[in-house]
Image (cartoon, rainbow, N blue to C red; front, side):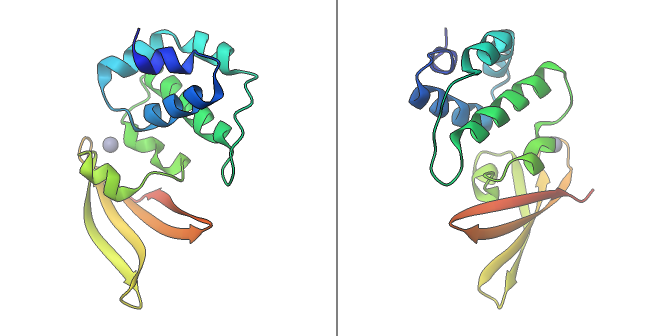
Amino acid sequence: MSKLIDDILSGDPTRVWSSACAIIKLRDAGELDALVSVLDEITSSTKNLKLGGMLIPNDKHLQFALRKLRYRRDGAGCLCRLYPEYLMFDPNEEQAAGNVSIDKITYVDGHWIDFYRCSCTTCGSAFEVQEREYHYTWWGWRLVS
Ligand SMILES: [Zn+2]
């Protein structure tokens, strides 16, 4: 069993949370499929888990990880389509991972980042990504083409 599967099925809030965060960033097809194969088990074992969390409830990460695995199971398309559903996809990290390329950055007053223009390296979809800060930095992805 992989560490991610082991952790998300552990029933231990800290391990479940860290596994969920890793699944959200995960692109390895083999590992994703292995997780999808135990999706029902993951769903039931995490159902009533109290995950806590300060600014963002940790359950949000878990719910998005589950959403991603269901999307994968259903063969619903390119993973970039999930960017608009989650506020913690940093375009710089996504670019470093090879998932998108940042084509343009627009600044406010030549200083603060207003938004990025990115394109998916897999399917070519283009996104406009707002960068905002309110207690923490978050990104709002919007599909533009
Ligand atoms: Zn894509």
